[in-house]
Amino acid sequence: MENPSKDQIDASIDAVYSDARTWIEMSQQFDEMRQVARSLALGAYDFSSLGHLIGLDDIYNDLQDRMTSLLHQGSTNFDNIANALRFAADNYAREEQETVHRMNNIY
Image 1 (cartoon, rainbow, N blue to C red):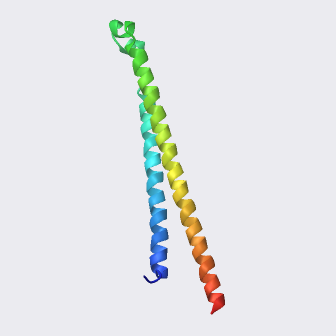
Image 2 (image 1 turned 180 degrees about the horizontal axis):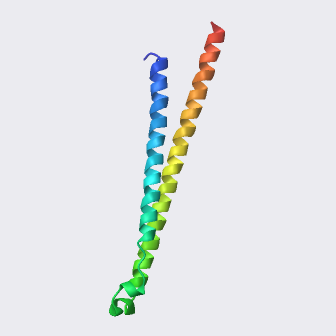
């Protein structure tokens, strides 16, 4: 197997950066969904008196809190994945530049 060309290496690094951008976009979408979910508040007056008596408003609020928490966790996880991908791509690019520099100094 022969060594990859500079174009192949550059394309690989660009692909990792592109993947990181995709994860960031998904994180932003989760943040938007979380804001929408948080805005869908219902109080006791939005339920029938029987619904309120049996605790539907509390159940709804607990569900809303859980959904917004999960969306926030998802967004944070997606940011972490994007950061890891960018870190890996940065390191790979730096190492490639150092290797090319060393090789040029040898010849």
